[in-house]
Length: 134
Image (cartoon, rainbow, N blue to C red; front, top):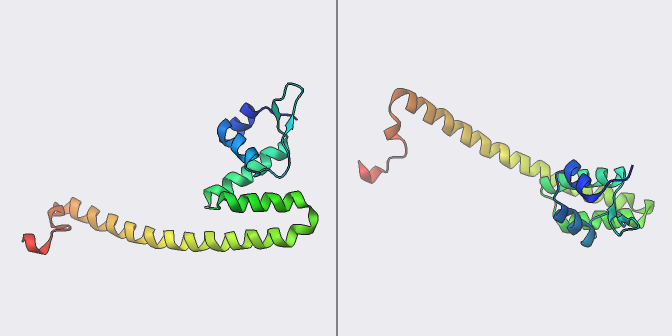
């Protein structure tokens, strides 16, 4: 099935501008085909690739790393070990970020509990009172 750029934008949640950027910046694993009128024609495989890219980006992977991954894909099957290493490194970074966010969430949840208790008792004015102000 062939898809136009607008259809791909709708299916991926990416803007048309972002799709053009991905192509221009070498973030696609191969050239995007053009029809007789010069319009971009995407395949289901392209949509799947872009889905992965949106998840990579949402997880904090830099465009330069996505570009490197795309380059490895373009170079062919002999690059699987390098691709695996790149993905493992990113996975480690994501796991570390999740741990950091979980610590942040614990602090926030604690503050929500404390503020909730004070608001319910009507003693919220006590929260974060500067010692010099008393």
